[in-house]
Length: 468
Image (cartoon, rainbow, N blue to C red; front, side, top):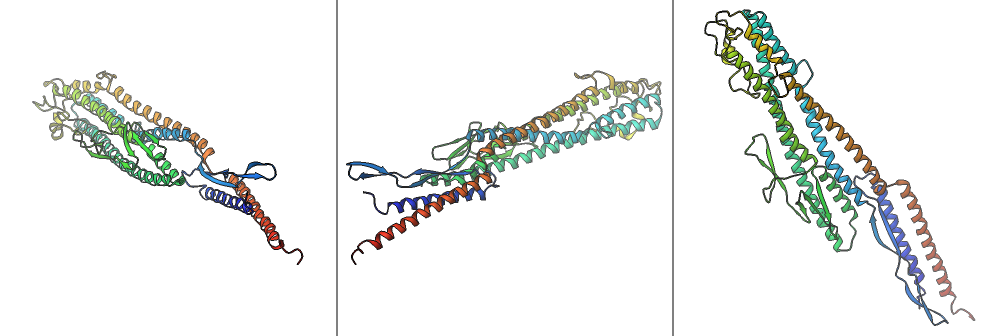
């Protein structure tokens, strides 16, 4: 038989359930602007019914026992979470490439009056001027000045590219430390989540915090995330486990013996090279190891071609002074990194070989041949100018591609985030409605207790008073 006080128990369960639901709604409102927070929903179910006999029938039935709060569920779309992580790693990679190429464009500064193209044009023009006035010391001084300016420009561009490569290497090391730090935080949260799950608790806020950390990690590298039945996450990069439940297998940066301006990113446990597969780490590796070295190689090729072509013609030419032949104009063996004029040219203007004949030092034919190098097809891409335009054009195309793809990826990520927020984001209007709904239910349950209290008081105080 049901107890006389069963109604109080049912009303009490309603008070408790609605109070907890009110607290969940209040928690949602409080975290409406908290990054990574997913709104929570109380899951209410009828309490397990109790059997009760039906008087006079011989039958029994089940009577309700009230309501129970069985779960506070996070509202998240796991598919959208995975899509956001994938978009984040692509965005991180393209943004690093975009920024690196923007710096490269600033280094070359083309087209401009101070760029290498202008310096080259002035260098060739000075030889043309010398061909017109081969015996003029002023024309020879101009050639030496423009040659010095060309060498200085090559060294300056190489130095800036070298410095950019070093900056990218240092930024890579910072990002590796950031990824390791995030991985340690995820492992610590895994431990707390596992403990809560063992105690049959729902650590929703801890899960939100961990998901936010994993998204920050996804911006750095291409992650594979797996969550077991206890809610513990495992994070891997290119088949190598970074976070294995409560343990972290960190990365480390070590000097690269093959390059003094580059470090190696390896797994600390095994020493194997890290293959991030995407994200900012991949962007820094590509910029440091491919984009910048490729440009340095192109700059070296341009510098050594000019050095060799000018030196070959200059070696066989004649200057003003007797015996002023078999001399280089540029230092022998120099590259873009150390390009300089030959000592003979720096010390004596008369050693500049403008003539093709010792007997006629003023014919200017050799200077004319050197000036004509500007229009000769001596490289695979054509002339020296064609080659340099090709290099600058490639930089421009790559920079525009990086800008376009980073903007497209950002727009796509924004769209995915809007879709995700429609599922997991807190709607204040909806939460206010829920607050009113739970408040009314709480008030109704309190009214049930008041009614039952009046009934019991009437029963207790009125029983046994007849005939007194």
